[in-house]
Length: 104
Image (cartoon, rainbow, N blue to C red):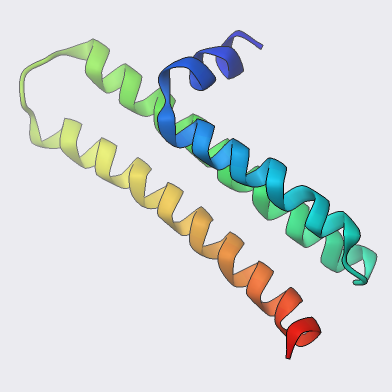
């Protein structure tokens, strides 16, 4: 719970993604879709939050190890950020594929 509290206090991206997930969760529960589709929508929301937590942890460790600029430090942060991007892309694509037929 300390980790979640720290992420909420110190990580703006986590706060934004958590607020978005809280707003999207009722939609996933409300729409008329199969249980598997509903589960996919909810799981992708959690995947984004989990990956963001891991990204924040990697950034904190890299910052703690040293303040000097090192290519591997930048690479670690960039790769972790790319993982967040990929999780957001997965979430967006999943929501689009599941919900588009309901709208079109």
